[in-house]
Length: 405
Image 1 (cartoon, rainbow, N blue to C red):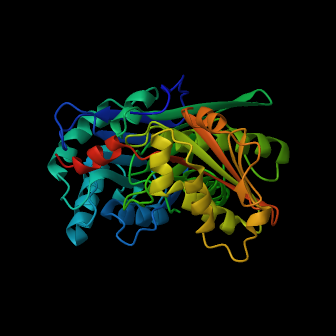
Image 2 (image 1 turned 135 degrees about the horizontal axis):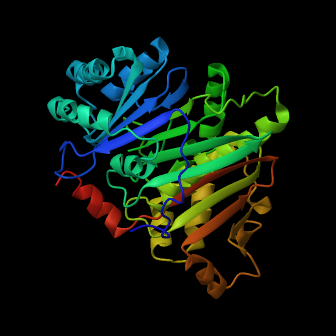
């Protein structure tokens, strides 16, 4: 199941980027499972990675290589996470980097490896190495859709989006792809995201951009509260459009950041709309808090409450579950008499009790929607945060119970 029927729209080529996707039989026959991305020389790359202490071998290698050299290739496999595999897993990831480097004529540390799939199984390196020559031969600047499909695991549809800007007669494109459906609560800085632009952006600036924008997008989503061992988000600027993006150029910088923000949020919310077993998409807004952290504490407590999520799946306007989640979020000196909770356009709670205007039919009408907004007004400051989540369905349990079969 998934919310809505969104398929990627027209995906724009990014100058300096070529992609391919091949079926190498890593876990299933005749399924795209090995994706290669070629970055033209001179491209800058920024990355953020999972904070899980058991971060996967490819994450460890990718972080190291990103520090050592300018990246020229991303090598992405599905079907096997290469996580929980110790030193052997690191050797396997490095061997795959070396194999690609030999074929492509680059240094091994110019290759970043990424894996997603089952944890605790050793990487079938021979299958990956056998797929590399075909992946190199089929690189093309238009293979965005096949690449987006090639990184999917339990996803039911690809996540990909583009944006375009015009600046003084020049054109800048941004295109991103992502995968993720379960084990979703990024802490970056299972989820992989790759966003590319042909803008010319200094590496330090690129890192700052990515940190800021990830915190407004991928770090604001949760399906089940589980942070993957393999979460990665990469932002690449090839510079091939010739348009420089810098904070010193305030007018265009603002326009570019707005488009980049759009791409990241579309990918992030696309993951929630395609969450495992999802039939509902919920946006939780917490406003007028003392600071950002307490707003996030409330939003995540509501988003990850099994009782809230199962009520959401049942389209049951059981607003008491939302109220209880807000109350146990751990806020000090919370004055419930100043608090209000809205479900869409319907006021649920006012002054710590059911709103006088509330009717069950109005609550039911809101819960019957596929996309639902909850607004919690704490009335104790000026901070605000938004988190996106899904419902908890029978299918979520089935998918994860049967994941290895």
